[in-house]
Image (cartoon, rainbow, N blue to C red; front, side):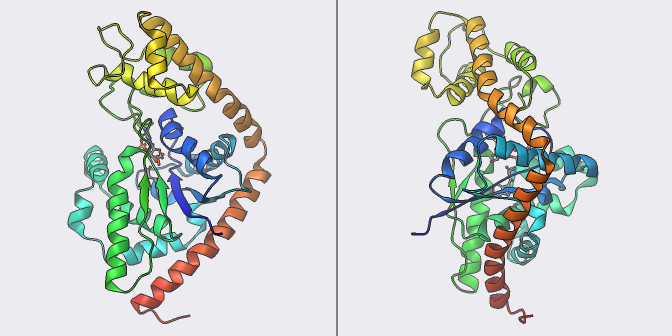
Length: 330
Ligand code: ATP
Ligand code: LTN
């Protein structure tokens, strides 16, 4: 029996946050048990914003080590680096030819990121979601586990798959997003109306997966709450709601259990315990991470084998695409 395909990616654009962990990586680990999973480190996506070459190299290996340290097993899933599989860039070009400027112009992420770098807007940032569609469609992907912020990009991937299939003939599977009900949108600790992002200016806005216990305690202690004084899961208390989500994701306890446990206890004790569950959840990952980063040969073996397997699958799809659009076979 062949398993259904899952594909997802994370950008090597600097330290990963607990938002990346809860919204994405934690789910990747569960899915590897029942699906044929491809998890990519999307370095081509990373250069849509300015990168220092040395840091990009370092961050790419870091994401791979975090994947492994979080429990992804190269025996169970395919782990690879996007730029190692040329088909991603090649399919992007073909998909660009059926992408509408108008639709790309409406992408929220493009609008937000282009606002931040008005004087030097690059074309890759504009076509970023097309590359993401290529990533997904090359593997005949059924499900794409992502955080809430990627929903619109997934819509585009579905549109492009359908448009290509209609224009030529059935070629791509139309993928579905896999967005969890809880944890798909971990919020900024200082401004809980925004999503937690590693690119926030204030470092108290996020907790990184590699932050040490003291820093985690400090950041959670400083997290913005409110004057209600009740640990309750409601939109009126976005800061507390976010901390409950984080607590729940790390401890496995339900929202209700957490509300009941802290009823009448105030925020001090609650925040201390939120920090504790994060610290003990991250500790084994951080230990394994440190070991892995000392073993570059092993990391190299993993990404090389991953690229070989991924290339084989991707080339099969790309070959079909090239034939259908009318390119002469080499
Ligand atoms: P940036 O915040 O710098 O724009 P990013 O963290 O959104 O980048 P990636 O590192 O590529 O970009 O994201 C990897 C995965 O993590 C995606 O599936 C994304 O939806 C998810 N993710 C990112 N931030 C959060 C968050 N705050 N809550 C839940 N999921 C998130
Ligand atoms: N755009 C995504 C990262 C990403 C991705 C993908 C996610 C690139 N290609 C394919 C899922 C499937 C982000 O999280 N910023």
